Amino acid sequence: MSNISQRIIYLARHGETEWNRIGRWQGSTDIPLSEVGRAQARALAHRLRDRGIGRVHASQLSRALETAQIVAAHLELPAPLGDARLQERGYGAFEGLTREQCAERFPDVWERYLADRRALPPGAEPQPSVVGRITAALTEIASHDSPASVGSAVLVVSHGGIIRSFLHHATGVVPAPLENGAMFRLHFQGGVLLSAELDAV
Image (cartoon, rainbow, N blue to C red; front, side, top):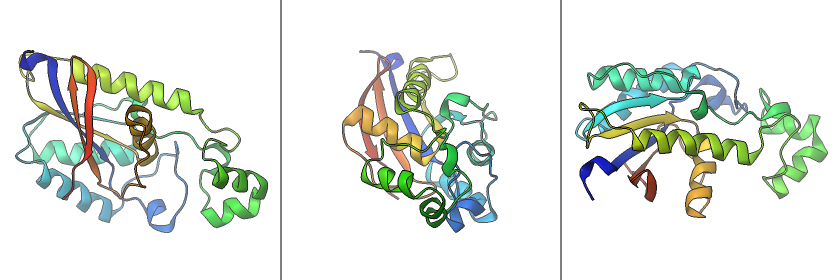
């Protein structure tokens, strides 16, 4: 099969925010990067310097979009546009709360969630919706070719929860919680995911 039908996508989690640092649930709440997060974005750019990145895509939430903007600037690539399909799952009643506050304010809901992560809090986005939108976005990105990007790798900056949901659906394996700046290497052929592996530092 020709190179046109093959695509490497580096799927990365955004840099740290203040809410990450103190353990608040972010979900679809738009929280900016901290200075630590910006440093992590620069480190991600350094890791990707020789990976043949031709395009950068990102969630439209500022923590992911700024991470992608920092990487694109360092790699001298066009600025990424935000894609709502790549944003984090909405976690409804849990957003803005720490784990301790979730347990205190919603004890029954919290216990059910700990026992079964499919038992989501009120107002959370259902799993099929989450998986459907990120799968559609990644498939489209993997399938897209232009004269400037044929054969080049792509960086996609998204969020820990939705990345783990996608990989669980695609591979049957639940990844461990992701550090800020963690990255997976996805190999697509003909728009179909062939493999996914953690890209260790």
